[in-house]
Length: 327
Image (cartoon, rainbow, N blue to C red; front, side, top):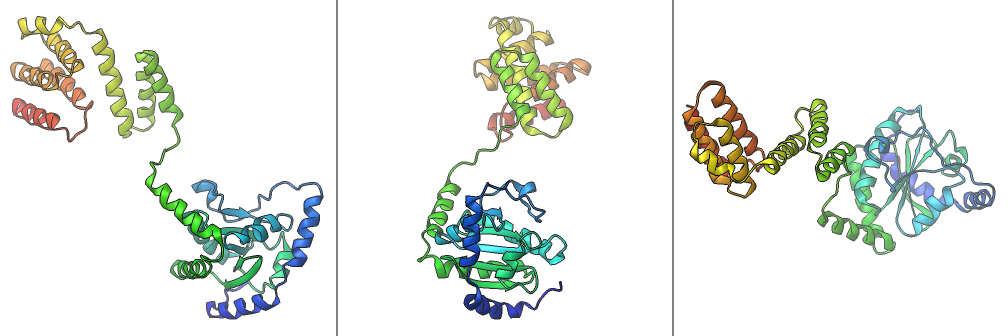
């Protein structure tokens, strides 16, 4: 069907408010609910939830679920009914916009999607002449509507007017809005990555070889994963630090030209929070060495930098000193 003129939306709203009687559909829904339950509608809706995560505020609705998902919900918050069809190109433009705004509203209003081909009685009930058609229902009755794939700014304005008109009448709107405000103050916890969980479990068991291998697999797949890089540096350092002998510091002081001793001593110093001493030891070793020995010390020092935030003043100072020692 062709896109209707958006200016006809007001006329559509007026027609719906006087002509739509939801009681008949509600009665059919009651009868269906007493019959054996049908499986949830999957439909072919152009629904962005599959890509962005399932939302409780975006639902597919059939004649059988219409009462619970539309009539009963509309007693608490507005329910916006999106009447669409798989073959309708404008529907595929409009539906993602509605879905995105429904998720952002956090339950202040609910979007229900009706495939008019699969549910012709609902389309007939609303007297749908063209799709997409969007109907707002509150208190069990249609109160506003528009037709066509309107631009998102106009849809946002329409939703804002809807909520403003109903905020003092439907208790769920304000509750949802207040809940969204509180949720923004809470720290968001991202789902755990099983690859990191595997590596962290190995680290906690003291199996540093397995932890290093697990983080290495992450970096093989994602070479730029900064979290894995930092964790790998921590694993390698911890393994070295646990094996380090505290007396290695004194031995390194007595043998300044022993590169291996300087590396071990730096690890031992860092393990007891003598950060600046560890950095200074390796910078001075860089000054005294050349060739492969110098490269070995420099790489070890850089690996220690990775244990700290890049803006740590001790790291910044040591990087500056390292640059001076190298050049």
